[in-house]
Image 1 (cartoon, rainbow, N blue to C red):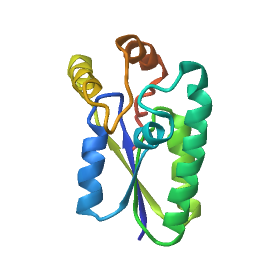
Image 2 (cartoon, rainbow, N blue to C red; image 1 turned 60 degrees about the vertical axis):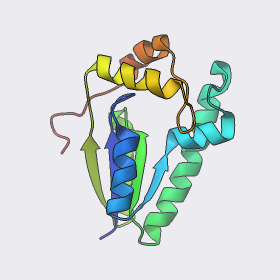
Image 3 (cartoon, rainbow, N blue to C red; image 1 turned 45 degrees about the vertical axis):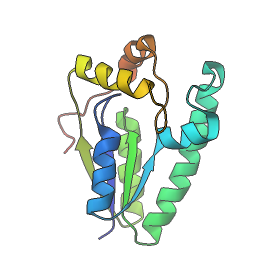
Length: 150
């Protein structure tokens, strides 16, 4: 059965590294939000335009992954899945398309995550620039998995 692989975790948790390995092992099509943002809007998109740009990329990724699943292809969604609503929506869409959904939780201590981000910030070939303040502020938007989420 076709499967939607959902990668959940905060910034610097290792989601993209894991997703790259998973896409090769399965095989599957990997869709990584930051890579699309980087190629379309640069490594440090203007903050006043970020939400609009983020939304546009999210819409395009949804179009691609749902089309792939409809064709019977597994997908790896490296989207973070920070909110319960987003996780539930993707699960419901996968089910409506006749696919399974598998959720992977990645995590690490904040100091480890920030050290990884500092390293990434030195060479922004595959990721967006993340300032320390952004790392701290965004933590308030991150919703850990609920006890009922497998």
